[in-house]
Image 1 (spheres, rainbow, N blue to C red):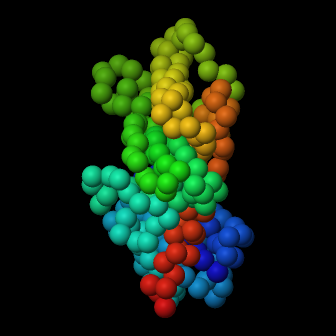
Image 2 (image 1 turned 60 degrees about the vertical axis):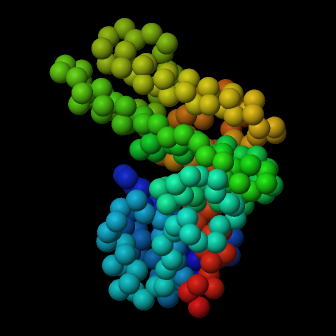
Length: 240
């Protein structure tokens, strides 16, 4: 079985795959530590943290693993002037999109600490995209870089107002509406440039965003894990 681990700026996620079937997943190091390691053949690790306890856990359990990087065999080529700076979460998300929609134009949106926009073309080329602050980062920035604005917590609101009637609701309206308008604007631009575009979104804020976006978007919670598994399958010979 394949163990796929994604360590982001704020969260850890892992998935245990039998070929392409996701059998088990979790969202913490404690959950990972109860995985039956005797069933794990190989692992792949995507991490934005240089040194993480997961590395030690993998080594102590004798699990061979591949750190994800742009230099691995990928299901797409990279038209990025600095591929070494391309986030591994973006690489994995694009690989997951290609597994679901091979030879199709795809816009992959990740909505976590940051919001990223990643365009892969129907000829398997990662064209590029954009990076902007995520919802929580925007709330924190308004608090940290002003003298009096309060820190507002992220809420999965069923309805987002257009007009705030006090300071807190004005901040909520500003942040949520800015993010939603931004995403819709990017989608419109990409749709104008790429025909028959499939739009996928993943990340912690994805369920909230999908519920408020008008576009036809595939909500794909396990997309990064699926992409990691795909890349691991392509590179398993490196561990033999």
